[in-house]
Amino acid sequence: FGANATTFIIPAEVFPTRFRATAHGMSAACGKSGAILAAFGFNVLVNLGGKNAFLPQTLGIFAAIQFVGLLATIFLLPESKGRDLDSFEDNEAEWRPEIRTDHHTISEQETQ
Image (cartoon, rainbow, N blue to C red; front, side, top):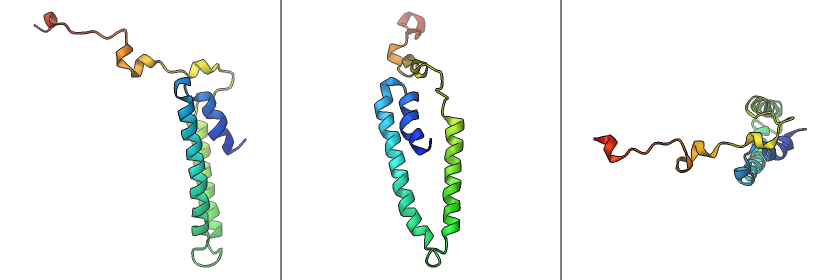
């Protein structure tokens, strides 16, 4: 339970197999960069107006960001409980027009 679930466990389940390794790496990189940004941001924000003067407000800002992350996780990620990983696979024909079977080639006779 926690941040590792959204950066390690869930990406392994919900990304299509074809993109799983790349997307999993990007998800982990985003999590790491967020942690670095938060660590440096905390040090800058907490001492605004004096030593530890902005601490309660800084913690409030971080709590709000965490709440937005919670809402995004709950409402934007698909639930994978009880589902086969194949159900998350996309239909490649939807985004690769060269393999579509329903496309219609216009011949010269049809254009005249």
